[in-house]
Amino acid sequence: MASTRIISIIGRKNAGKTTLAVALAAELVRRGHRGMTIKHGHHPADADRPGSDTWRHFNEGKAERVLIASPELRVLFERSPDQYDPIGLARRYMEGADIVLTEGYKAATLPKIEVYRRGVGRSPLYDPAGPNADQWVAVVTDDPDFRAECTVLHFYDTIWLQLLVNLALERSQPLNP
Image 1 (tube, rainbow, N blue to C red):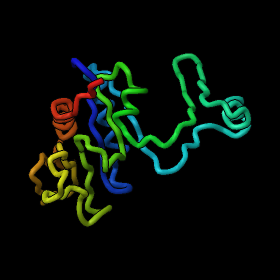
Image 2: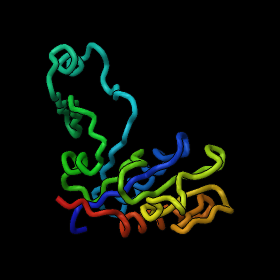
Image 3: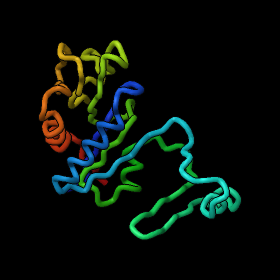
């Protein structure tokens, strides 16, 4: 791929966004792409243990950034204002990616793949009359009767993931500098 591309995985709570993002990322990597992900959260992240050295650096020492560097893994804790812009985050932290998958950025003006499950919500987020309907690349669903103007893939179809990876690569947005 020539430049980094970005696409967002969206859906209602408990629809399976993380499961889909993980499967998509793994298939992209299996195909030889450098896939990276950004997970949006609505609550402060709690990825460290109170009392650990890094926790003390960050919380007691009030360091702006703390980097844990160990063999084969780096973790960065950073104090910064809430930056909701996934494009800005990808530019800052995802250098070298072929494709960045974001999860949970419903309002962002990015191409979207929606996970829609009947048992989670009566209707998908996708609205064909909505002002951003053209941002939907696909809806992946367990509803055999669901139809949309964008591509619809069904979980019961044995090649839905392969088709979705192709769509993500083709329809993701270039992350121009």
